[in-house]
Length: 91
Image 1 (cartoon, one colour):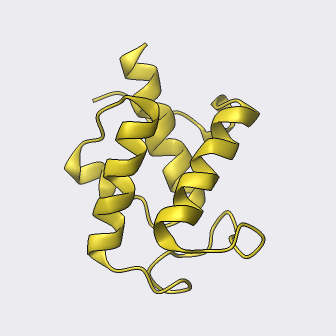
Image 2: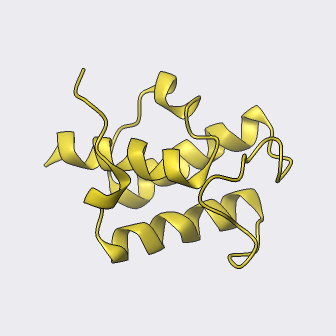
């Protein structure tokens, strides 16, 4: 397994697309989401919503996200890390 890619390794455009997907799938207003706000605790997402988020990110970025990584995506910062890692391994 490769080491996680720091979320800063993503470009601004990729970060913006990720945030858009997260907000759309989890029904969060873009101005309300924070980098470290828990999707489950602060925004009320359930496990099915996180699975849907993973699937949507896979389609948007044409990457594969391991099921074990989906469990890590409970805030925007970790989504950046997981997607960054997936992009790095797919390039």
